[in-house]
Length: 475
Image (cartoon, rainbow, N blue to C red):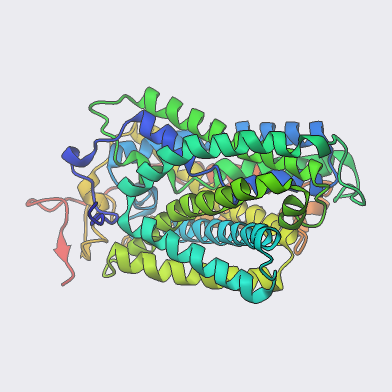
């Protein structure tokens, strides 16, 4: 299979051969991994029992899907990834806001997947073979997983799609066997020595709904376009793609997260997940657990790393996608090493998803408002101006930036960060919200409202060059 040569350029019609079923496969197969499973552990670690954990995850996931799934339609129309597509609202240079948000999201989730997957693999091998469970062993395992991940990410979309189709079947079987393996130890009560993280039930439940449920779909706000750009709108309608996205996210996120909740309760996993998960597993399930940790981590991290390569390629147009992917892999692996030895898993995960949700939500809202306003009609060639290191076009705005959209995003992100509640940081607006984290809602509302208010009077588009959309080449 040849290495994919496409970066964030427009995908030609003849190469757009994927369909809604492929979209479901990649959303299901890539998410059946410990990097997603571990989010199901968060509600029990916050002090919630079975049904509060389940309702928090399901509610948050459904809300997130309603908000996130329509973004898949943007790249269906533009034939490029979502951060580049957002240039229609933010400007061909302003779309760097989306690239940075996407890069941070993918970086964090890649590191988390390698981190948890590596810890479980070392723990399983320790019980199976007597391998010392030391920092050296873990570092070596992180490196092996990262190397395998790079292969899939460099070869690109086609290989990742094939991997996802295999994982969609194999991982479902492994997780189904896992339900049987942990059944004798299962309990509906919260893990021992855990209390409500925020002091009472409803604030803790809302935190779980955002950190464990909502964060899953929001992680895809910049990723969905990586897949739908390979689907042709001539052969597949928007409604089918939208429903395929929603269904793929629903089963792709709920299956692993609910498995995480189930195993966390069975293993009495309070302050840590990987250790109790391995210790509680019956000896016969250690090999399936090892396979699930390895295969699932490579599949999920590979897709995240692929997206990181695209976002970095968008930020640095001179770099090839392959070079950008290798650089992204090195940075993600460094984050794994640092996080594993310096951070508490629960605090790191919760802080990361809440902060990135607050920053990313207003960007997604503004992009969706733009999609509705233009009715899905874009100029794909004009979106590529920055990649060609040129100037001009209908999305040039002011020096390549739509200052109204950028200011709206900044306002939404600032309010979101001021309203967030994490184990390491609490925003000043929490005093006005009763201590409840409303960062997702407030950041989206403020970003969307400011953008709507600032653009009530349409901004005049720059005149197109008679010879084409791009007016002046830089070099």
